[in-house]
Each structure stands twice: as structure tokens, then as C-alpha cells.
Figure (cartoon, rainbow, N blue to C red):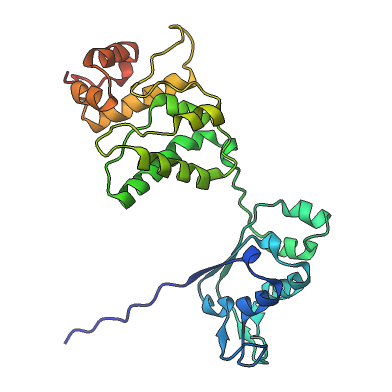
Amino acid sequence: RLSFPAVQPAPAFLAINCSALPGEMFEAELFGAEKGAYTGAHQVRLGLVEAASEGTLFLDEIAEVPLGLQAKLLQFLETREHRRLGSAQVRRFGGRIIAATNRVLAEEVEAGRFRADLWYRLDVFSICVPPLRERRADLSGLIEMLLVALCERYERRRPNVRPEDAAALQGYDFPGNVRELRNLLERALLRTAVESSWLEFDRGWLSGKAGARVAPKGEGVAVSETGGGGGLSPLETVERELIQRVLAEEGGVIRRAASRLGISHQTLLRRLERWRELRPPEAPR
């Protein structure tokens, strides 16, 4: 008779949005409560700290914790011990705690809205994620990743982003960061015909928000407006990268790549004469 070890459940990952909890519920949500601990507590309430005891507890928007409750949070972080409301039994937390905020905690401490000792206790290992406007080099990779996920969700093949649209996106600051980018791509995908090879953005939005020249609908790879010398413009860089990717996906077959790019075979050949390094050896025409 064969016997197999029991499958251990994966450690829990529980998140709490500190800004969404009223102050009077914050402690009960975190630490739980015994029956009768407060009005309306008709049964034992398991807190998130206890539920994530051997896993990860994620405290989002940590700067929104009311000042009066920050001392209790600090005590829990220091001792790793907690009690349900209305209980004398001490429980120990053996998991990991991650906190996040979109504010600068040093400024919150200086303004008196956040305890300095709590900040020092949280600041063990910090990762600063800059806004999207400060990491524009990541934009093309994020667009690719988000498009793939959206196309899987809607069960569609992935359309390409026109170089002029990509250049317009590069000129926008995205105050809503990645969420705003994702929503923009989702709207564009829903506007795009199933058989279309190009993602159809709201071109009025692009021209108004990004201040970029938006080409008329139907244009394919943008024609360069610069001279032959020097480096590439942002638009040419996007165009070159798109041609390189599509050629690789089509195995170097130029006619198929031109069809996917929405340009003529001769137009693509002229681009490859200019950027000879993109043309694979013995590339089929």
C-alpha cells in the first residue's frame, strides 16, 4: 500500500486597506474579538493577524491608521503578540508583515500625523516604487504585459500598438500610474475590432492628454521625419523595436511581417535597408 505525505496548505496572504476601515473597527478587524466584546459582537470574530499567523499580513495605506491606534499597532509589531478584544489570552504572530503607503512617512512624522517610533519600527527594509512618469523605460514592457493579460481575459489575439500611439503614451505622465495605464489599454482593446492588427485608442484622448501628434486612423508604421544622421527619435525607436519584434515572431519572413505591421512589402524592405541589423541572415522575402 502506497502512502503519501499530507499536502500542506500554502501560507495565507491577507491584505487590509487601512484607509477603508473606520477607527472603531480597526482593532477588531486586526486582532479579532470575543463574543460580546462590543455591541453587535454576537459571535467570536477571527482577526486578520490571527488568520495570517504563519503567512503574510499586508497593511496597505499604513499612513491612514488613526494616530490614536498607532500605539497599539506599534506594540504588536514590537512584541509580535496580540489579544482579541474582550480576551485575556495572548496569541503570538509568527508570519511576515508588509506595509505600503503612497505618502512620504518622514513628512507625515514631521507634520505630526504619524508616530516617529512606529515609522522607525516599520522601516526595516524599504522599497521605493517611483511613479510611472519617473520610469518611462518600463512603459513598453508594462504595455506588453498588460495587453497579454487583457487578451487572455477577453480570449482575443493581441493587437499591436502603433508607434505613434506608443510615442504619445511616452509623453503622458500617468497620474493614476499602472492602474490608469491598464484601464486605458482595456478601453482601447474593447474599441478594437477582433480582426484588427492594431490597438484602437481614443485618439482624441491621446492627442489631448499627451500633447502628441496622432496620426489618422489606418496609418501603420510611422514614417521617419528626421534626417539620416544622429540618433533615433523616440518615435523611430518605437518603430524599430516593433519591426524587430514582429520579424522575430514571424521567423524573419518579411512578407508576413509587413502584413502584420500593416505596411507594404516594399516599405518594410526600405526600413530594413536603413536598419540592416534587423534583417536576419538569409531572411526570406
